[in-house]
Length: 225
Image (cartoon, rainbow, N blue to C red; front, side):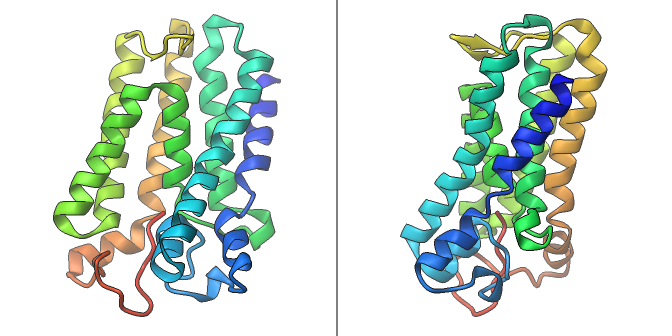
């Protein structure tokens, strides 16, 4: 039952269309601007730094808030604590990517996934965020940075889950029993795989050399979050 509750609660918060609402403050419809993506990168490109920051913060919070709620509800059970985090986080990312308020469309889940990782472990979050910033900064492609972060996420998750290494915040370690390992690996694969799949069009453009660089301000540039 806790799995269902975590998924539903995460989805409910994740489905709040942050970028769409921020754009409405400007009298705009983000779905009709730039790439049409409602994530923070498209908001930044089309509406400016303030809108991009607001969208990013909102996408981060709509993952963090349900995670704090389910931690209070189910986090006392140490043998399933990380399952609570992963199911809630997956629900938030699915809600962001497929918001019923936007006819089951949305962003690409990078910022919301970042909220899940931040809640899980600060060092893990720093590693993934650092990789995204460095790769995006050196290449000029936010999509490449996001894809690199997704691959690193999968690798680190596999290590943490299979090795049984201790991780998490000091006040809230992400504990789980050995019986949870297969389930956690599947959840991690879905989370990381979803981020990669949502960038499938960007992957094709990167391979063809037609992907727009973030530093370019061309009309119709593609958002990646």
